[in-house]
Length: 531
Image (cartoon, rainbow, N blue to C red; front, side):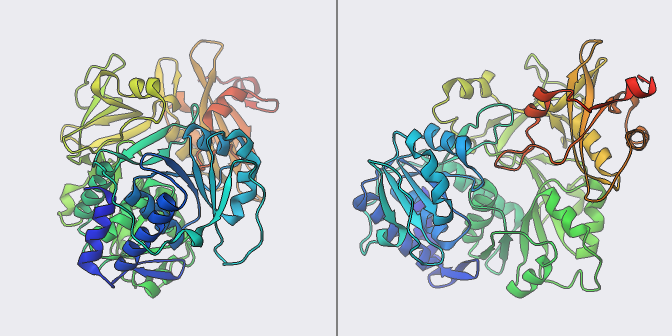
């Protein structure tokens, strides 16, 4: 099945039942299906897009964004969601590399789109969405680019169903590109529905559930582990544009939320809120995501009366492992690990030569699909990158992990984040976590820099909390009791903020390239202690 017929089947089962609420606006299953038809006709018969054409979407969470997504899926147009933080070179790259012929754009992003259109030789249509319904004008997008208002494309007739296969590409999702240009991961209709159905079974969702997310629809998380999962279960979902730690539980009470998606930072923000007598007085019973800091996992569940289920995966291969199914005894999970293989993929831990290593030894996590189209279909227009990622018939995640004798995976680090010092592999993540535990530290990024003794030394780039101070030696003392001696940073660089890309991931390649900047503190030079 492809997403278009799947949406129709959902509408036939649930009709006028409310399917979702986005920023206070609700729509039924039948309404989603009907509006997908109307907009699909406008995109195809109206402006001439065809199956296989790429159309980018630069929109915040809204019902119009959902309509656009489903209309493209129904008509066979390949959807290219763009992070709304993108601008300039980054925006031009994604739109150009995807060869998008059309862009659907919230009016607030029109100016930044107009700035890059001279670089987009294949762009033919800009479709503007005005959330407030006003008419504030629009910039010029240059010759050869037709401008449309999104409401004008909702036609009165259903489109002619295209001849689509389940293996056809539905969406191109761009990876972060922390070590190079972003890569467009192509996901088929089958892959998206496989993820949807697996998540629904994993979490045990049913018609009485209400799923919440504030994650954006340009990420796989909100799309295929919240929206489509809720619809597959006949449930309801609530989408917002921003997460509020202070107002989260009140929102859940008001909306009847029974489950939510998270990433580690979200849980930590909730955990750090002042304790209240009604912390567990809400309808939420399940959380899905990763990673929860192991030391707060069980206290979080007890304080808020919520059960967490964690997974390990990526855009290319979602849910490689899972830790704790919703309807399985707690003994099935192992806190501090990423769980056991989900059954969607085969998984191995391999050494640098690609040879599988025994349990207990660390190596790269590699994955290959079981029957059923669960993996991505390659990187768009990047044959060499695709071949490199799939060398030996296995997808190389670039992540380092270890599997125990019972099959539980522990994620260690991104391999390129691993600092090699004096024959020892140092987990940058572990050093960062330890530094971040200092009460004056807001965040830290750890990278390797060249050592005069060969291999690398550890550089910690540290951002302090507002109005807080800490000396270098105090921070080193803080680290000394929390990690192996060879992992304690030699260098400390104070920064106002860490460099990030549009997906808010730290640009470690930039920190490595900058290396030892003026003012970087050197423990060896200052204390004479090398360790």
